Amino acid sequence: ALPSADAALPAVAVVLQVASEGPLVDTFLDGEPLGAFDPFVIDEAALYRGRLTNGAYDWPGVRNVSAIYQEPALARGLRERHGRDLRFAGVVLAPGYLDGAEQKRLAAEASATLVASLDADGVVCTTFSSGNSHTDTMLTVQACERRGITAVALVCETNGGLTDHVPEADCLVSTGNEDELVDAWTPERVIGG
Image (cartoon, rainbow, N blue to C red):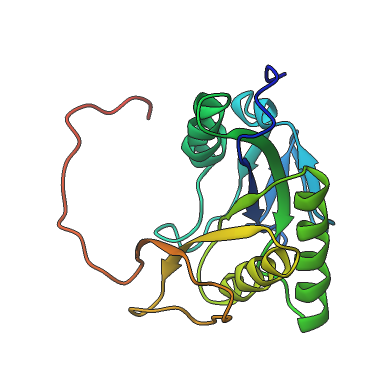
């Protein structure tokens, strides 16, 4: 548990978007596929214990790998700043890459409701992938902003840009362009097979 912090400090939460689309593209919690799920608050310490893993075997340059979930730099950074210049409010695990417009809207509203229940003043919304999941992220940003919660979105660009955008998304951080080519390289050391 986090120690108490000055209530005058701004509280910041994270919406960690994951997708679990079926065999070969599932995300697992405690070894079980998440499948269709409603957003829920997860103890960020559970992430460090390796409870969340990605089993997706497609789009390796875009999807979040297990190491990103199990060594969450974003949550760790907020935890380290807790009590100094902010209060870390918590992590909401939210579905992304949803198929239908109504599913997307309901998940975004549920995520925003959970963020509000954490008494967050601000939230960082992550994106599982690109394309379809941009819509999930943008709707979550919009739902949070409409509740008075300042939202920042972390997004991967597709073909040089976003595939969706809402007016409330006025603070975006690009995590890169999935189509940008990188030079081939050889690691200095390989561990494993």
